[in-house]
Length: 263
Ligand SMILES: NC(=O)c1ccc[n+]([C@@H]2O[C@H](COP(=O)([O-])OP(=O)(O)OC[C@H]3O[C@@H](n4cnc5c(N)ncnc54)[C@H](OP(=O)(O)O)[C@@H]3O)[C@@H](O)[C@H]2O)c1
Image 1 (cartoon, protein in one colour):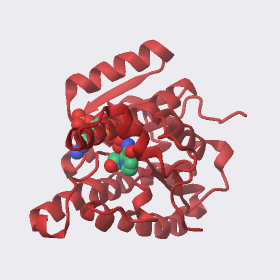
Image 2 (cartoon, rainbow, N blue to C red; image 1 turned 30 degrees about the horizontal axis):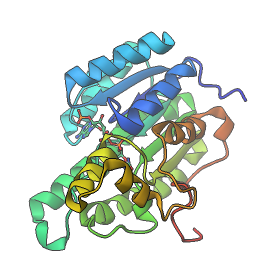
Image 3 (spheres, rainbow, N blue to C red; image 1 turned 180 degrees about the horizontal axis):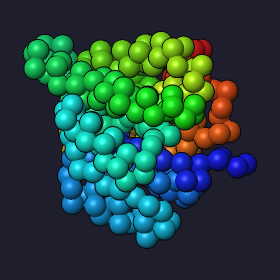
Image 4 (tube, helix red, strand yellow; image 1 turned 180 degrees about the vertical axis):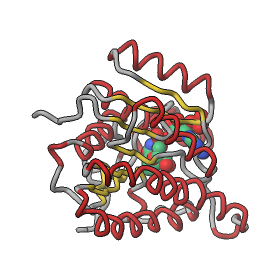
């Protein structure tokens, strides 16, 4: 299948590691020009160098904290200066801290809102005029399966991420006439550093090995294993492609079937 991503310009947030990194690599393999963003400049530059070496693609690394308005502007501005336009945006960052309702003050809620919701809105707002002008665009965000089935102990994530899905669905209806699609991708358990550190902490608390805890975590997943970042990237790259031209306004979980709901 020709995905039609050769020479397309793609921005991927949270791309020094994990799902974002896998997505950036997937786009680079398709011949896209890719801007990657994350806070730690050393890790980000190392990832950019690895992707360049693997694929020969043109990769721009923009160190930035995407919860800050200045940083989202800078990522888009530097992409436009280097590549001239933006065809695909993958809004992605880290997740907010774990915890229950009693642990969260206004500052915690505001930080989660800035990290997951405002970062997405600001990036989409900045790239949309260019997508409208070229009558082609793909807006994607990476949230969590928790928007379909809230996860106990993740009150910030459960509270803030559904707002992104509501916003994205509405936006998909506003910009569809410009040949721009807006979709949301919802990871289940994907074996990235974020999951690794959660499994390690739980293994220590339970006095178990990492592998025992990982296996126990996968017990309720119909496929009986956690996902690989590449399996997320495959869906992200497809949704960004020409091949997904009639997929609009959806939020799709990539979770091995663990969400029990029908929709
Ligand atoms: N992995 C899973 O099982 C899973 C499940 C459900 C939902 N998710 C969600 O999927 C998204 C990606 O998760 P992941 O597993 O790939 O996480 P990860 O392996 O921890 O990677 C997160 C990436 O985002 C960057 N990042 C974090 N905060 C940022 C910020 N403020 N501005 C810019 N970049 C930032 C990190 O680099 P720096 O730290 O250097 O900035 C890193 O490159 C997160 O929202 C996560 O909560 C993941």
